[in-house]
Image (cartoon, rainbow, N blue to C red; front, top):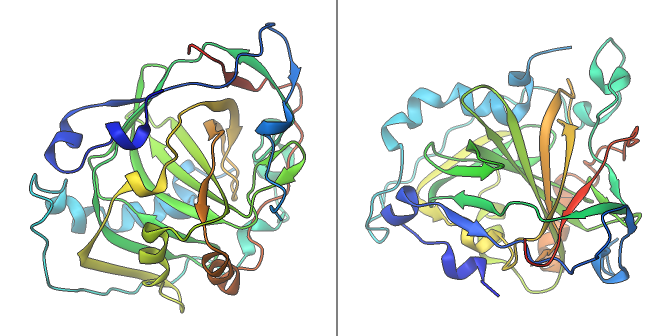
Amino acid sequence: MISLKKVLLSGAAIAALTFSLPAIAADHGAAHHDEMPADQGAPDDHAEAPVEDHPMLQMEEEHELSVEEHHAPSGDTTLMVTETTTTTTTAATPPAARHHEVAGKNLCQSGHMQSPINIAEYMPESLAKLKIAYAPTKLAVVNNGDAIGVRYEPGSKFMSADKVYDLLGFSFHSPSEHYVNGAPYPVEMQLMHRAEDGGMAALGVMMKLGAANPAIQKILDNVPTSGGETVRADVMLDMVELLPSQGNYYVYDGSLTMPPCTEGVKWHVLKQPIELSLDQLHAFQMLYPMNARSVQPLNGRIVSGSQSGS
């Protein structure tokens, strides 16, 4: 069994190489919809506009010029800029506005391939391994009025089905937007990626209660509570601390979970959760007690899941 934490590297090497997330789900055999095994479910304690309108994409584009010179971290990850800078921008919309089904003609009401979904059954397949090359990044924590997130420096890559995407950033939703076997996890981290042709891919990472996560604590310690963005040039964030050790996943065609709910997003939801502490969960919920969109109907879509040997 290959551990993701063993193959994710820091510094220049990770910017130059692509690493595989092994697909090691239990083999369910038959090539038909199977009911999800109990051990794949949530734990007992789980509680028409362009794509660029998505808040994480807005923040990434608004600051594109300012981060260009920092394209990727240097090879020596011990050399960090000691100057601390803080910038604040105005939140794009009032709190939680995007997570309510708003009036108007957009895909949030009319779409047939909407996200999130309840993953209750799936098609076991020999899915291609997800390949990632996420470099450490200077910490840039965003509070856009709907969620807490992190804007990522350019240069980190994600590959799915031979298509390469750039990591833009990620956000946190509590409870999780995707359900597993009819129940949510306490938190879901959603990483958003965009390809050169404009295609979007999302990676969902579930979180369950357990040990405190140092990377999550870095983010919580730098949240701009009044909205906007906090940039810490002296603090580095490494995605190795925010990804599970196993790479088996579910995949389906969906949408952005915030208006305009643009469809055509390739969703990947990792089966293995990571942990955060109860105090860390409460810190998220103090800011946004509930910032998850309701589960959407499948409308005939097929959810695929990696199986043993993928």
